[in-house]
Length: 363
Image (tube, rainbow, N blue to C red; front, side):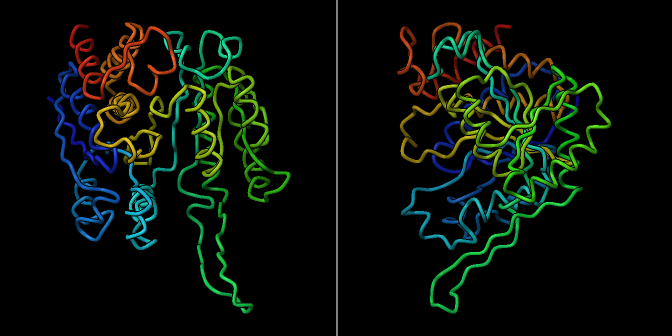
C-alpha cells in the first residue's frame, strides 16, 4: 500500500476551519493508498506564536512531505501591524514557500458548471451553460520577487523601489506548461500581456513566439491585460487557457472568482519541479473566522487537485469533484452563495463538509 505524506498548513482566519473539512474529505476518499497528514503552523498565527511566519519546524515538515496542502494566510490589520514587514505572512511565509520549492506554475481553474450558474453575478445570457477556463500564472518571478528598497531620498521624501524581473528561462518554462495545457484542451491559448507599456511583456512575447514553434497545433491569441479583464466580464466563454505573469495572474484570477460568485469556488495548484502545494485562491477572511459560515469548496477542491497532480490518483480526484458538484445539484451551498440564489439551502462550513463526505462514500 502506497503511503503519501501530506504537510497540512491550516493558516490564519478561516484557514483552520476549512482545513478541517478538507481533511475530513481526504479521510473519506476510497483508495488503496494511505495518507499521512502532519500539521504545522504557518503564516500570521505562526509568527505570533513563535516569532517566525515560516518556522524551521514547518520547513522540515514540508521538506519531508510528498505534497503540501495550505490554507489561506493573513491577519486583520491591527494584528498584522504588530509584525515586522519582512515577517508579515505574505512576505515571511508564502513567498519563501514558493521560493523553497520553486513552485513556478500556478493552475487556477475558473469553473462554473450548469449546476452553479445561478450563483454568478453575470447575466444568464453571458454565462450560458457555464464557464470552464484555466488560468496559468507564473508564480516565482516578476514584481513580487524582484529586489525591493525603501528609504528617504535627498529631498527628505520617503520612497520605495521595486524591480520587475524576468529572464527568458523563467518565461519559457511557464509558457511550455501553458501550451501543454492548451494542447490537451481546445488548442487555443490566450497570452495576457502589457507589451505596449512594459519591456518585460515585450520579452515575454518574444519568448512566446520561440516556444510556440514547438506547438504548431495550438492557436495563440494575444490580449492586453486590461482588455482581458473587460473581456472576462463581457464574454468569459471565449477563453479556455490563459497564461500570464505573476501580478497579472494574481489580479485576474480574483476576477475569475467574481465571475463564479465567490472566491470560495477557486482552488489552485502551485507546482514546482519536485513538489507542489495546493491552496484556495482566496484570503483568510478574518472577519468571518469562527462563525462557521466559510465556504470550504476551494480547500476541498485543492485536495482533489493534489490527489491527481501530485499522487496520480485520477479516479479518486474525480470522485471528490463529483461529490462537491452533487451537493450543489441537490440544492445546498454555504451562506456566501445561498444568499444570492433562490431555493438554495445554506449549510455551515462543517455541514458542507459532511454533505461532501456523504456523497463521496455513497459512490
